[in-house]
Image 1 (cartoon, helix red, strand yellow):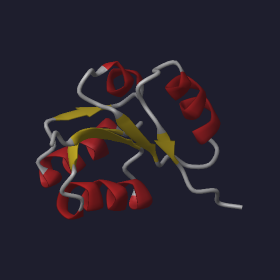
Image 2 (cartoon, one colour):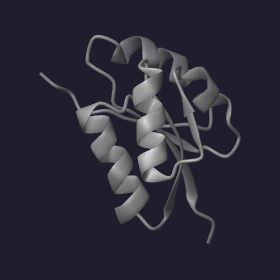
Image 3 (cartoon, helix red, strand yellow):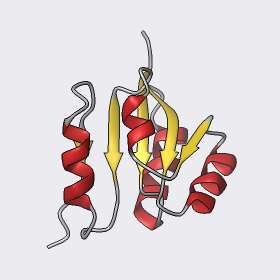
Length: 100
């Protein structure tokens, strides 16, 4: 069975936790890429979790053919724009908890 390719957008505290769980605790998932507005943070998380790609924008994550699901873990203020951009990519889904 092929693994589900996943990207995580927003790798602050909660996004990093999602990425760690996908990388280490979900055997059916393959963490393909992480993205964060802070490119340095994205690069650090990618390096620490041995993720092959990192970006400072959601668009390259959505463009990847090997990603079938995207976890959007951005701050509440930037989630609506990220979620709208995500809708243009038919093969992705979004998991975002509501904060209020």
